[in-house]
Length: 95
Image (cartoon, rainbow, N blue to C red; front, side, top):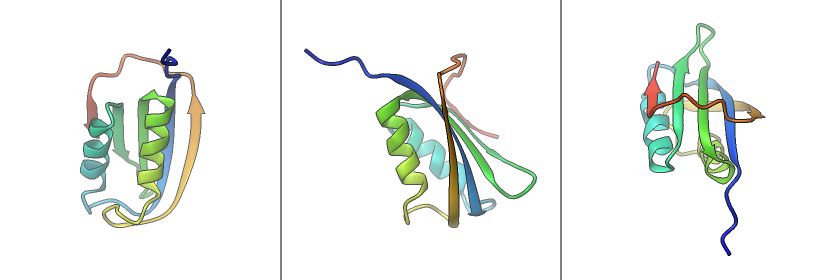
């Protein structure tokens, strides 16, 4: 019997040189490949906030990608927060 995947909401704040380098587009592409919904938003302080909802394992995969050496720009640190999904998201958007 296949176990039902637990749904989760990941909020990640990506620190480093991640604005103006295609980081949000790259994040959106990876999230869509993983079947996640959410957004990637530039913040005024230079960080990118990533909100993703879907199965916990897929969100963990996205978090690992955000921390990998394969991202555009330069990621110095990724802070994460986990919560229950809120729903109401459609697709994955860049803001």
